[in-house]
Structure formats: C-alpha cells, structure tokens
Image 1 (cartoon, rainbow, N blue to C red):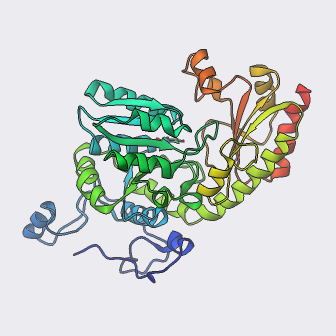
Image 2: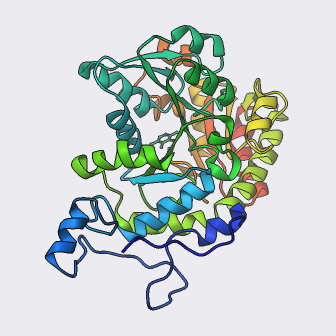
Image 3: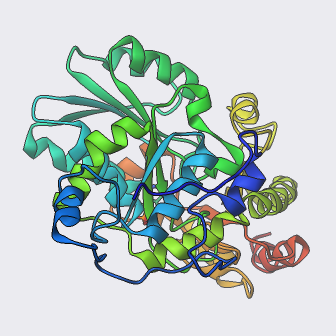
Length: 400
Ligand SMILES: *Cc1c(COP(=O)(O)O)cnc(C)c1O
C-alpha cells in the first residue's frame, strides 16, 4: 500500500489546494476530511508489518510518526508554501526544536535575527550547552548577517515581520548569504502565513510555522510544522520525530487542516482591517508612532510590499503618550478587544509587550530592542474595524 494522492489538475491554484489537498476520502466517501483518532494501525500479516517497520513499504504504522489526518494537514500546508514536504509538530516551538535536532550537531554555528520570537531566542541560546553556538544579528542590516558567517555556519534563522515591531528582513538577500556559505535559511512564516508570503519563492530552504496562530486562525489549538524539500524532511526530520516524539495530535492537525481552508480570505480581510486601523491610529494626536509594514512611514515598507503580496499583515503596534500608564489606560478601556498575548485569532487581541511577551527582559534590553513602555500591540481579527476604532478611542480620549 503506497499512500495515495488526491486527484487534482497539476495546475490547480492555491485557493483550490487550500480546500482539497490532502489524502483521498476513505471508502465511505466523506466530503469533509476524517479525523483518525487512533494510536496505531493494523497490518494484514506479520510479514507486511515487518516490511512497514523497516520502511520498505509505505503505510501508516503508529501515530507518533504517521497518521492520515496529520498527513492531510502536512500535504495541504506544503502545497500552500510551495514545498515538496512538510512535517507537523506539537507546537511552533517543537518545530524549531525539530529543526535544530535534525540539522545541527556540536561544533555547528547558527546566525539568527536578534528580533525573533522570545522563546526562539531562548531555545537557540540553550543549545550553547550542547556545543551549538548562535550569533544574534540585526533583523534589517544584511551586512551584519554576512559578517557573522563562519566556516562552520550551518543555519540562518529569520522571522518576518517580527513581533511586536513588525521589522521586515530581506529574505532573498539572506538566502544568498546562506547559500554562499554552504548553509540553509529557515524562515518563521508565522506572521504572514503562506497566504501572503512564500519564503521558498525568495530562496528560503525551510519554513517554520506556529499553527497556533493564523493557520488555525481561531485560537483553538497549539500546533506547528516544518516545511521544506521532501528529501530533507524524510532523511533529517522524520527520524527525529520517530525517536523524540514531538508529535502533532490528529485532533489538532484536523483543526488546523480545516483552518487552512479559510486562511487566504481571513488573512485578506484581517489585513485590510489592520491597514484601516493603522492609518486611523497614525492620525491620532496621542499616538506617537505606529509600526505597520503597510504604512508608507514603515522603514521597510517597499520591501514588505514586495515580499508580502502587497499586504502589511494583520498585526499593528503603536506607542501612546504617557508611557506604561497611557498604555494600560488604553488597554483597560477596551470592551471588545481580548487582552491576551496570543495572535492570529478572528477575535482582535490587545497586549502590552513590555510587561507580557517581553516582560522577562531587563529595562535596558527592552530599550535596546525598541520595546518601550508606551507600546501596545493589536492583532487585528475579523471584528468590524469601526468598532475597533471606537474601542481604542475610549482610552486614547483619556490621554489627550
Ligand atoms: C507563537 C510563535 C511561535 C511559537 O509557537 P507555539 O505554537 O506557541 O509553540 C514561534 N514563532 C512565532 C513568530 C510565534 O508568534
């Protein structure tokens, strides 16, 4: 039994792949994908079982490393990212752990943006004790990436845009630096998702996802994935999954799988609302600065538009007058926005980065990172943007 493919025209477009790529239906002909809640799979006889365990015959064996619902999610996400392979993981962080365990060994060196997700930064730092050293460089200064390259550099790791400052890196330039030094470029595509940005088209080798964010899109599950060439997935990452078991649960895979069907229209609608909100915020006298790649005032506006399908994404950060007090007043006056550090939900979320996601940094570290006390991050959902303006205006009016 080879695992079958869905019959689709070879030139099927992304929106079609997003609702149909996966596995063919079972013998029952279900139209919505089945949820295979089973830990193991039964073999017709002992000899077949032996062949399957020896990887001589392709089949589902044990859900730590293969499950039809997880495979459907992997195939669909790979199709959307434009990669030949994908492996689902238990969380976004598990996908980065998978990347490190699969690709690197003691004595290897990594170059990573200093503006990546906090836990990502911490994870790379933690691997120093296993002999894998990481140099952290500017998100936006390509020369720093080039200067950090060493003969033992095996991986470059970037995220674009970043949280909460929405800094954009030049993916094509970083891919060229990586390949010039015999290294791979991995990009965390959490903030744009493949609906807006396909890093492999810009030369990236591997794509990291927190499925928890836009892929699920409704704040229900924790999930992750690594997308890349099938050969690399099969030889480097599947063996790690078999032995280390940071497996994606079939239920969570099913939720993400169904989320992918609406990803493109959600990203479009949420990004449109974010742009409207960012433009409105920029016009408010008590707002000192707005960070949003879709605004002409953003330092990497042109690059962002070129890399992100002309869209700024759905995350907007801004600085209000009055520092921490001003930010807390604004957040506490909202009646619609959810006060939570999560993002990628249809429900708009609002957070104070300096005391939550970046609360563990020292004040000088935060200042250096540009995350000031007056900063607020809004991850725009599907709420009506006029309601969101009114929700923020409640607090902003008190700062005037
Ligand atoms: C949330 C997030 C992660 C981690 O994902 P989890 O699913 O929470 O483990 C990684 N990268 C970015 C950019 C994120 O926003």
